[in-house]
Image (cartoon, rainbow, N blue to C red; front, side):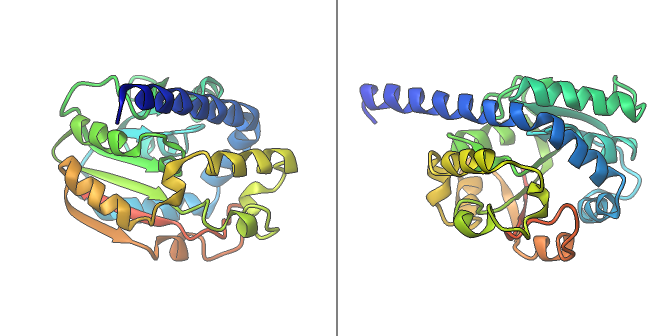
Length: 254
């Protein structure tokens, strides 16, 4: 890529990130309420059941939650005794996440949230036992660089669990569907803004999670396992948290 094209691409990437931050700033309050409801529901146990398949029984891990939002994983994994650091690009999400941690009385020395870019992690090499991320990768202008960064901060033998979906592929149908219960209360204007963001991102045009597998291999991950039935298990009920998009799980080990 030429220098001028690179500069233009980086300017476009900054515009996308700024737009993503503004979108989640507006949704921070309602998102907090949705995630608090999820923590108090049986959905939290379903998530733990899926995650704990990969955690040795009784072992306490140092976990990084990338794109933590208002702290769902911080609460459910922090209550299991893990040390967990959440990061999010949006300041309002970070503040609501800190509020969530305080509301549940978790030790802030072992459960914390800070503002940080998922593509430019401010951690040393080989820091974390586990990286977990949910519905974040689809928002990244530089997903290849992000995966390389995530590999860098994992300890040798450490694991990444990434939960995402091809949200842009069926946006005309699923984003506006009345079955998309997780978007109850989200205005038409905000749905349209989300739709526009989908189509600003190159990752929206890729075939996932097959694309992720190849990128993860190149980033240095091994023992990559993809489960496209994950959403069928966790979102089989059309409850308050239901999404019609088929969420997949990617497990990759360093």
